[in-house]
Length: 141
Image (cartoon, rainbow, N blue to C red; front, side, top):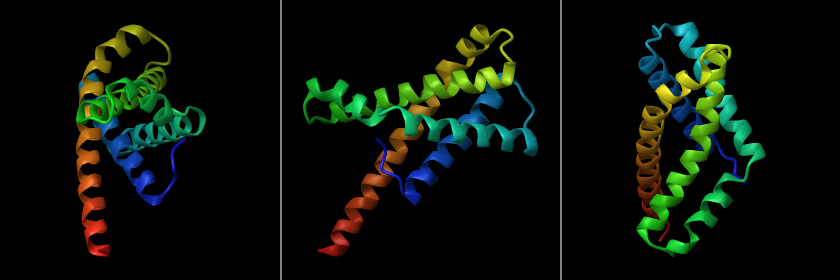
């Protein structure tokens, strides 16, 4: 399961903002505060619920095990993690946005772009967090 901290919640909020904004842009939904806030809040809640119910990090780690401890294994682990979250989150958000009407068409129309944006976001966050952790470790020495 996910280890909860203020950093985890901030990362979840950043991802929710980016994914919701991207989904609104891709779907052609006009961006105004109330719909954007409601979509971001929904995305955040769905993401947190997934983390409470599904052991995504463990599943991703197991999927990447055959690749060893390489950088490729880490990138694959991030991809599997992101794929699980994005399938569930984007399907949930699409269901909320469409009310179930033309769900498959709407979801397939947005999922590839959301997945790409989400994966780039996750990689950037991973690089930044890694750099911050290394800087913190150097300070403590």
